[in-house]
Image 1: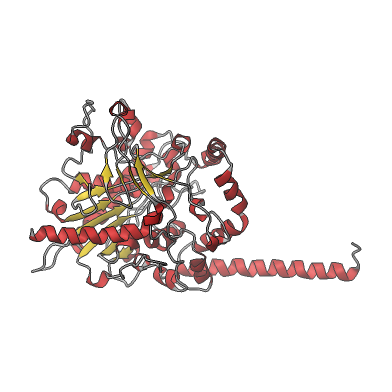
Image 2 (image 1 turned 30 degrees about the vertical axis):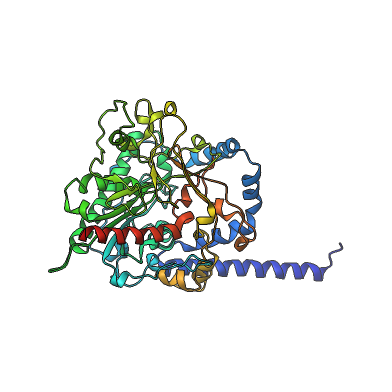
Amino acid sequence: MVFNSVSVLRLGIVFLCAVLLWQFFSQYLAALDQKNGFSGSTIVIMTFSLPSLSWPYFLLKQCCLPYVVEAYFAHRLFAHFIPKGALNISLVPRVPNYSLPSSWAARGILGGKHGGSIVPPTRGSANLDPENEDHASADCFYIHPTTVYVPPSSSAKSKFNVDVGDPVGRYIFSNGMLATQASAFNHVCKVYAPYYREMVGSVYYSDAFSSRNQAMAIAYQDVRSAFLYFLRHWNKPGQGQEERPIFLVSHSQGTEHAVRLLDEFFKPGTALLNRLVAAYLPGMQIPDWTWRKKSGKETLNFPRLVLELDGIDLCWEPNSTRCIVSWNTLSFDAQNELFYLQPAWSLLRLNNYPQSQHVRPVCTNPLSWKTTLALDPEDGVPADECVQRSRNKGSYFLLQLRQSFSYLMGKGPGSYDIINHLGPLPLAEEVVGACCRDGYNRVDHPGLSWEYFLFPVWSAFSFPGGNYHSYDFAFYYASIRKNAKERMEAYHKTLWA
């Protein structure tokens, strides 16, 4: 090709226009972030770039990339973000004030609708009950999972805990976690969801065990303070009214804090335990040995743990109440040990126990809602509880192009407005089944999705080794919503029994 002066001039004009457009777009995104108090532009760019630019990698990962290779590169990359040294208490972010609205992503119906107030559209037979927070007779206290995995780059900030004002964490929580997790309960209860100084995600892989436990203790103190404020000011029944039932809901890091709340506040015979409809605690291993001992299946002499949870049973049936459900989702061929996500707090870590191969996590099947205890190897084949994907009527897309369009069009700062401006994608049907095996919820690898250019969106946020941790809630959104209503109805029946 021969370039003359006119061609060069045209190329120069095109290049200049591209630079000016990019500069304008960058300034526009910065203005939106400043207006909304979020770092939403990062999420928006990721939402578009993952399907459009990264799908060849995810196809490779899904089809022929060995887990061990995937885990090797993930470990090498992640190692750069694991904080070194001890936790510096002087750099820990300030304690949040839970009397301030800014310390809460959701306060029931106070302050209007929020991300947890949405009801996603559906296809087929997955009919979801409408949102009913205004008239709900129960309350949901929701503890969000980890939102920030990389510590702040500035040396003047804590590398172990996240400030509740962090714009990335606030956006992911209020526009993501509330919509995809907490909203599954808005037809039966008012949703309350505090911000807290969560432990940075990379600390899970730190060898500084004392700092890790300190960071979790800081986060738990916030959750505890928020829970006490919730009890005193919102869950406290009014004069002449019956006490309000409670759903305790969490995921991942939030589940660690929820277990500690159960141990501290929901003792046998207490009013709180009597008011507990159910605790939905997926995304983190809860050792099953307490309930194995009760059932007579456990004869090993384990040392007494601080967390016994003796007064709370597992939800054995779909309509059980005052009990715990929990599951952790892996593929059938998972090699979880390649990138093992265990609780950060030492008292919950399975490898702290002698003969830990006999201790497994609790597994409730999130489609049948039956809980089984895996048998010891010498007792024969483990008890499986499996349900085919045909019974899964609704999974929530974690990636949402429509929300990104809403953000770009200036909808905000209310997360409910951002999410509902163009509406979430309809729930997808028959994405995965569920099978409790050896203490884990096992699934077949889900397929592609035409909504995302035939992109394997159901594995975009999976962990190395076949771990679908990020999808514990999303895979079973419609099922969770239906089961919450079933347990609420069963709870009311027990009051009059």
